[in-house]
Length: 541
Ligand code: GAP
Image (cartoon, rainbow, N blue to C red; front, side, top):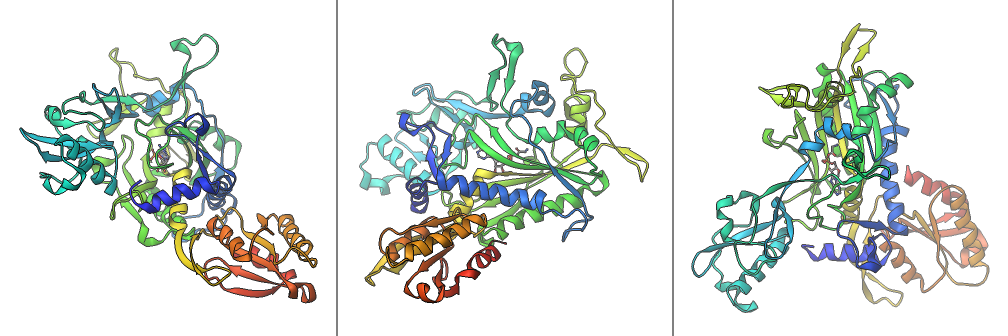
């Protein structure tokens, strides 16, 4: 991880039970992560905030701010293993590939654009010294390797003569590979030419396990909505424009998973396919792009750390006529660099037509059915009618699709990074101590309120337990803690992002009031017990 803040976040996640390395007792698995008791609550709250915004709190009777018209929203939950033809028609079977290179010396495999390096003046020639890292960590790793290559000591970095700024291996011509020092190799020239590697996890259905039984774990949830477009239209009263949303696991056999949960092999997506009339699609694209950016801001990401980036034409996916990314300044990146949280894509009619007619490809700027060597469609579509009939306008058309596709794990990581703060606060004896605090939005915080008896006698524990149960009964995640000095109890709660702490003290026993401490302002107010639940409920709205 690039800066020490990231190290501290990873360490806090493990120490307090947010995120663990998967199968850690067996040495762990690269690209797989487990959420602990607090992490599972945080992630559930992220999911819940998205689902509420998309589905449960959506009001189809009114026009949301900035939207062209009112619209319907519904949800689905579809299978992880879909019919193999889905992936042939969607393009994933042929095109969902990353370029990778192998190292002949170490037998390691790298994703081409994840290998980065710098040209270094060496004895005979220049060498492109590489590492798999980002930001300051890349510079550190490349310098270390350059010193080793030239037999220099760690305090002789000023003798290195760099001929370029850091760049991706993808920018280096293949005929220069003889001068590339691969990330773990001892000498230059050990990399193979780049080749394609399909990212879908393959499995087989049934006991025979032949090629005819091959199936794939879904690499995106989106296809579940496309193949159910007709089912949803036929079974519910949705009218175009409308959206179908889904949250679920996706799987990609990433060549170089890295940066904590940012790039994993198993992750969760929150995707929505919005079906609209082609003539309104650009308006809807802009609407969803701006609305999705605002969702992150509303849930606590500072606008200075979040950008909305429109893709250049040559960056667009094979199906897209317009895409924007919501990107966050993750601490493992260099200053000024951003990592993708969500893509908002205008997918045109690519998906519905592909599932009707067979896989489409672009020919002379037009989407046409891709032909195999025999002149027939390379991959047969379902042959089902996936058009939409607008009975008021008496018009039949293939809807266009706008897709906001977010990563639940990436959003969770961004909220954690944004919330992470360090400051100094006096302890119970007035000595200044370092404080770690997660300033999570109250809606996302795993525990909303903690209740402490000041001392373990004089009826205070019983009173505190009563308050604790009142919160539980109201469905608000609460904690009870009577161990250690009050300052330490506050700090334990600050570290996991609990926005409010309530202390039952001597006065409580006579006037039924308590102190309520705010995590961020540290202000302590006295409140009647009977107002506590509604106070916290109001803050969670
Ligand atoms: N249906 C379109 C689609 O899947 P994508 O940009 O490939 O688009 C959407 O994925 C989101 O899923 C990304 O913006 C990211 O948040 C998340 N995501 C993709 N690959 C991921 C990975 N390997 N690990 C964690 N999250 C990932």
